[in-house]
Length: 230
Image 1 (cartoon, rainbow, N blue to C red):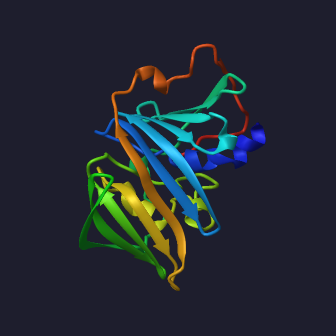
Image 2: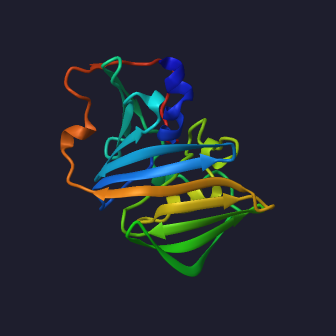
């Protein structure tokens, strides 16, 4: 189980720790695919400062992660063991920005599209030969990155892990209220290297206990894991 937590879906989900849906309450399903193929689908269940991430892969076996933005902590649920563990989210999104100057540029194209019923504007980010098209809605709260501070953060972007995530992620961190429903990154030769697409959006009124460990689960402390998110 330790190996799964360290190297499996948790790496990707933990990298999404900075997702914050400020107004939207409900469920968003995002499918992500990197250069090597192999689609991953993660459901984000959001309510205020709370986000519950549920990977849909069979090997996840019901494992989920709960992010508490107010407390800056994450709780990982392990149903097979009937256990959970809590660790800090180090480094709030607002503090992110990278240690060096970004070379990325963002441009609003003027094109619009309705994705799953939500109005989106297209933005294009260019950085060091790479080009990323993002379709952004302002109706689902804020999305602040897939790669911040996580050793596997760059995996889904088809690049090595980096502390601040991909260029498009860094730009989104400072845009309160922006949420991407589609992201397509291509290299200088036009080859697609990352694709993110919203598959389903379900507004709902959610119970508070969905964002807490179930009754009967025991707390487990894993040594030397550190915090995610910064």
